[in-house]
Each structure stands twice: as structure tokens, then as C-alpha cells.
Image 1 (cartoon, helix red, strand yellow):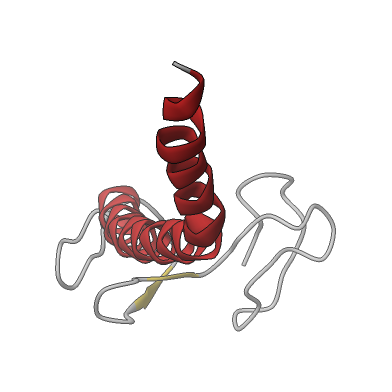
Image 2 (cartoon, helix red, strand yellow; image 1 turned 180 degrees about the horizontal axis):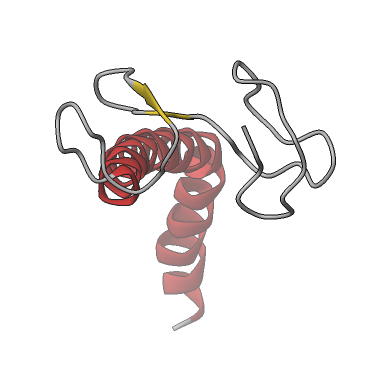
Length: 101
């Protein structure tokens, strides 16, 4: 077969052109069907770009949820560590500061 990009001869089983490294075989991300053209799967009709964008968006939502949970835990830990210092400061302000007034 010939490479559609550079016209070099390529083996039938090659996934990439040896000369220009263009993709010669595409694999559907949904069903795994291999074909010569990208874009839309010939077997199941899945649009490659839309499918990948949906998967990435789903992964981002999951990563954002994990990040938010981590932020809540770290702020809880930070507040717990600072609690003795803030209470001492508040107690000093109310009891020592009230004598000066």
C-alpha cells in the first residue's frame, strides 16, 4: 500500500509510515475495530474525536472531585493544627484585653 501523506510504499500490516511517520491504521477507541481511515468507525459509527473528548471530560470530573476532597481534608488539617494558637489568641484578647479597657 502507499502512504496517503508522502506516497511511500508501506507494508499492509504497518501502523505508521516509515518515511513520514503518518498513521496508516486507526483503531476505534470504542469497539477496537482497525481501519485505514480515522474520524468515524466503519463498524460501530463512533466519532473518534467526540469519544475521546467525552472520556477526557469524564476523567477530568473525577480528578476534580478527588482534588476537592483533598483540599477539604488539607484545610481541615490546617485548621486543626492552628486551633490551639487561635484559641489562645482569642482567650488572651478577651481576658487580658478586657482589663485594659
